[in-house]
Length: 211
Image (tube, rainbow, N blue to C red):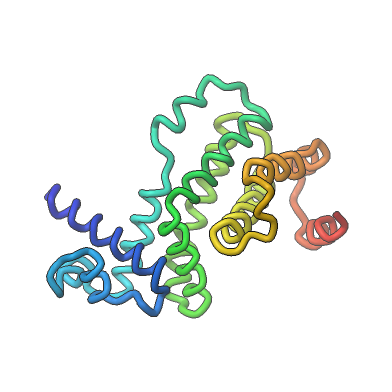
């Protein structure tokens, strides 16, 4: 059983590489077999359909991007506040940047979800579960910012990673500097006070345009 799980993870990792390097059109069972260096038909034995393969890739992406127990334990004694929040954000960006193929594969799935409702359903459920977990963790850790701020950080991190992993608009500015700016801007006192009331999407849109 353990050997089968190890083989399944290895095949999923190969699928992630194919998706990141060849795009969604290049994601076939044969392509994954070739990338994994296994006999033709092996991927089909583990993932019978393309939908099953995509489900497996999403699951594996989540496993590979999850923080380690060491990542979490070394911050347990730190005082909650914007600095600690920024440190968590840096760690998220570091993991997403270090696992370049994983993040690019995730972007490919995001694009495919715009064309295929069945992918959107699976990926959307996974994203929303992750977002809810982030909000719960942030609240439990006593970190600043509520659900609206966490959502804004998700949007900002997605954009930052797309920029850093493709063609940066400002390559001279370090990623850490950008993160510090995001934290300072999104967790400013007036936004923290406003997080206690429902967020009006139209008001937020106008506020962002006014900056």
